[in-house]
Amino acid sequence: MFLLLKNSNQKNLQIPQTLCFSLIISRNLTIPSSETSIQIDRITKLINDHPFPDHPLHPTLLNNISPSLLSTPLVESVLGRLFAGHSNGLKAFEFFKFSLNHSQFYTPTSDAIEKTLHILTRMRNFDKALNLMKEISKTHPTLLTLKSMSIVISKFAKLRSFEDTLEAFERMEKEIYVDRVFGVDEFNVLLRAFCTLRQMKEAKAVFRNMFSRFTPNTQTLNILLLGFKESGNITSVELFYHEMIRRGFKPNVVTYSIRIDAYCKKGCLDDALRLFEEMEKLNCLPTIEIMTTLIHGAGIVRNKFRARQLFDEITLRNLRPDIGAYNALMASFVKGGDVKSASELMDEMEEKGIGHDNVTYHTMFLGLKRSEGIEGVVKLFHKIVEKKFIPKSCTLVMLMKFFCESRRPDLGLDLWKYLVERGCCPHEQAVNLLVIGLCSRGQVDDAYECSRQVLERGRHLSEGGFSVLERSLVQAGNKNKLRILKKMMKRLQTVLPSSKGHIIGIPSSANVW
Image (cartoon, rainbow, N blue to C red; front, side):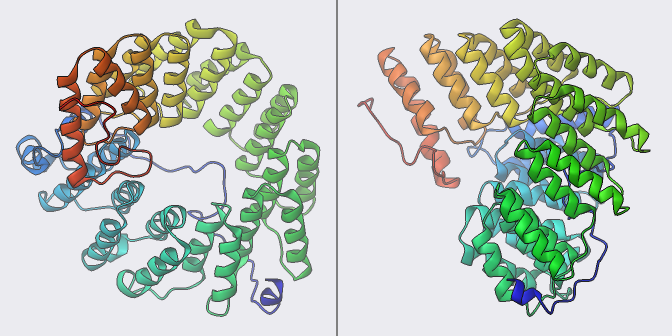
């Protein structure tokens, strides 16, 4: 690889903010008005609750959504909620098409397109994603960004073969981004897709095969360094870095971010701090992301006092602590067993108007599980409900598992009802845990109702959860309910093929027909 790099043009270019390595990505978001928020909730629930595929969604949207409502903040927010709530991707796509075709007040945005591409590729519907990009390239070509490309290429790299990924990249160049001359930025998108997935064999192959066509820049080398870091091998990171320096590469703040993060993740805080001092001597000014990384590193080695010192240094360096920095310090307190200080930090965040995100709550739930048990977790859960906050999948799964392991599936059912009421269809692993937990406590009817709601909203059931429910229904003599579920599963399979881990066909461990 370095023989190929030897004669490359290694200008110290400014790295595009949208693609540079960072721990925290900040975006300026338009905050919807209260009336818009009400409409977002209503439309999200309308789409999520719509029975699929028994009735077409389009007439429902037409009868319940006035074209004048379809503003940019509303469309983007609804798509975001549908994605986060694991709603049926085809219904979300139908809403996006509806917004395009039925409003003279709404113009599509890159954000809306990117969210729709996220939704389609997550459900492995790559043909629809590529066709959407091709259609947009004809009507609104400027809205297809590097991020749009990155979303699709990254999912190809994760879920499809190496050859399929290269073919998709080639198709984008020839059929979609036709007015764009592909250069190093597009090459970096492809390279990054493999590096972030720790597929360094594939990343090296891409680099070797395309090096002569796309001259690497600083970002290219940082992406390769990131790949070695993601692989978890500090030796490889340092070997690659020093070879980069030997070949004339000039490190920048992103380079140091990657190396510092590599040491922090391995619990080598002293080495990370040594690098931090080195970059300062080179007049490479630290960023809030690097400070956040170091605070995390202090938490990993259970040094909450050093974490606090690093946090206090943020303002001394004329930086402003953001939600990421507060979350890092909170995690350090929790890992150090100081849940009280972590809780006080939550209050401080609210006082300063920073607010809380999913990482904040997830971290506190972890701490409360160990320190206060079910009572502390339930108390924080009730606060989330009061704020109408929707936790992300990782937090939902953690809560559902904790409730069921604590022999409190009733709390899991409360969480389920709250999410459904807010227009969400929980992650399949959370559904699986709840169904098994309810069946183990003899609440078979509740488990059936949850499973029926999942299928009605156009989502497949997992094999494990359905097998337990099937046995429980047969033992309880509820064969009619089992027939209803199997009929719904068979109907859904015809329009939305299931993937690995879902019910493939309609298994039957007992003759219920």
